Image (cartoon, rainbow, N blue to C red; front, side, top):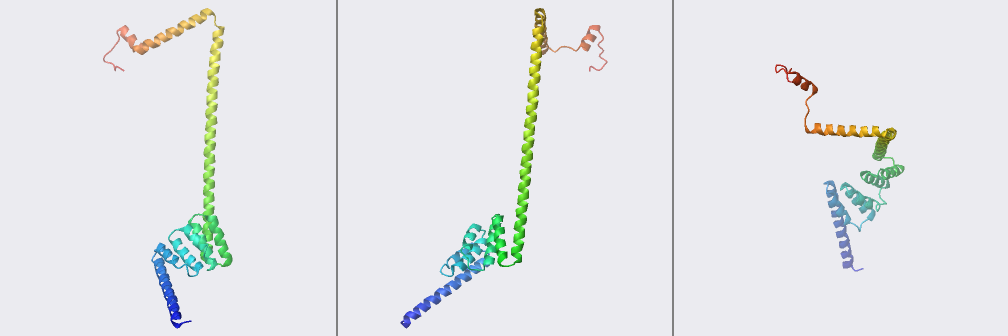
Length: 231
């Protein structure tokens, strides 16, 4: 191979390596400074490098940026790195998404590969939160059942009262009808007269306020004493 061509290839290779090194430095610096989205974009530019390593670093940056779905997608491409750590991080992503069953499964798989205090702690935390969530749901369901039972009992009670009232009204109506059937024509006539007189008195009272019997009695006897309290 021509020496000039070899030199050109070597120069190109070294330039690419230098560029990658600088990009990795920038990505790591952005990550350390908390600019996780920028870090993820910089790692994305290193696709020609070992893809599983790039995917893992990008996933970590996306996780820090709270883009958990995207982080999980990149973690799935990162097989080949430290598997126990990868599973631990996947578990953390699911934990943040409140998908506790998936989080627990990944923590347990990570512990099967290597004992780790952080993973064990997170596993216990995920299990405790799952139990608390289950208890909360059970309590909520029990309250809902009790509320539904109270509503049903009230509905039955109201229906029972309504049925009783209807029956009483029906019995009163029937009793009146039976009484009327037993009345002689003259008794029926007298009953009608009494109803008319009662109606007439009610109309009269509604139009004019009548004095009390006690007040009227004193007026008639001339016993009204202004020295007494009027009430």
